[in-house]
Picture (tube, rainbow, N blue to C red):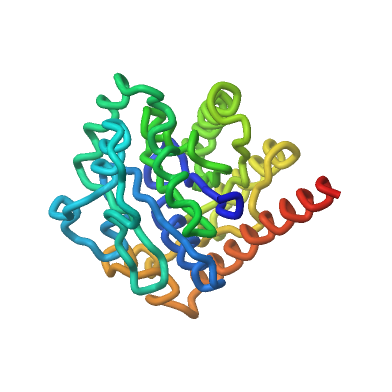
Length: 274
């Protein structure tokens, strides 16, 4: 179980590339021979849709069903509800039923740790579990942060996205203090970067200066691309859709950065154990 890393991909602002990053980073890790589970923790089911399931409301088992079983203290059979994608990742899908989970969690025992309880049962089967969080600061994202070892924060280099980061940092700090003391921030990832605009360059430079000393800002920047936007309707990753393009190259580089974080952590753990 200790060898599985759980990463929440989160930002309370929508449209910043959370789902695209979850899917492509997950498939990038699978291409590096890692066992990967992607969890769609958003009632909009964007991750489920983008991985080729156009009618999520017709799926027999989704994350909402799994979490309800945990709340009801019912056993969840091994592999229950998990779908297998052709590019080597597993998916626990979501649909609109998840929108009611926020209300049910309010009255649930250990309400912040329902998702963590489930994830702990599947950790032995995976090297990485990536959670695509909904764009809010409600009970579902808190469950995701409570279950995670670390956080990746996709952010567009725009004024409004930059303003929202401080609020998100406060929420992550609160979860770390009160619920999950082991939670770390792996880094801020700039997405949909149009390097031709001065505004994007200025905001990226400003945020690197503002956060860079305390929080890692990934060296990789995901460029804006029409080809990348097309992938969500095709049920496959950028690697399968445009493998030689600039976005695929960026996600390969990001995958290496994420793997390097874990290698450094492993070296640190080994040194500490000596």
